[in-house]
Length: 245
Image 1 (tube, one colour):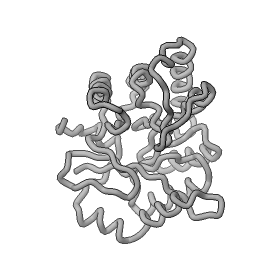
Image 2 (cartoon, helix red, strand yellow):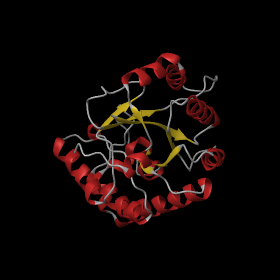
Image 3 (cartoon, rainbow, N blue to C red):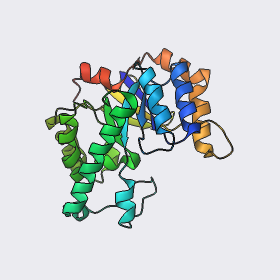
């Protein structure tokens, strides 16, 4: 199985960045998603610029569009947005323009094109949002995107999202996991494990610090080795796409 271990929220703040960079140096992380709107994004971008071997994606931030409209979140932190909201021209324009602006910010900060895109609070996965951003990703030669079927309330919506991604010519992993959970090596040809580590400082959320400790533990690295995963980046997946779909 090809396995991408990707850290989200890179560039949000220094405690997160330090954890991501530490885990990259330990060989646990191969990939990180840069939040270009974050407080420490420029420093994180400079690290990615100087470490081209680290996979780098855009962590698309559309939060202000949804929060300004008064939408709340579910128990998993995902915005509760009805499809009708996306029928407004000003909403479509805002999503389009912010995606373009953040792609350009990523390029300026890192000196390269993202090898994938994912979304803060998975906001990129709303099917109307996919319809807006997928042509932009093709235009800017972003080869991969995160997709998780659990985002959608029905199987047909999950299938429709994956079909849109396939039609756009982008790749995604077959499976998706969070935290320190790992898939069975024979479960599929590819999987992403999304992590949110941070250094254990006083102001940091404790769950992030616990996740960092678990990932940095030698036992986790031994699990990776003993299971025989092929650790990779989204760029690696795009170069040799899986055929399991």
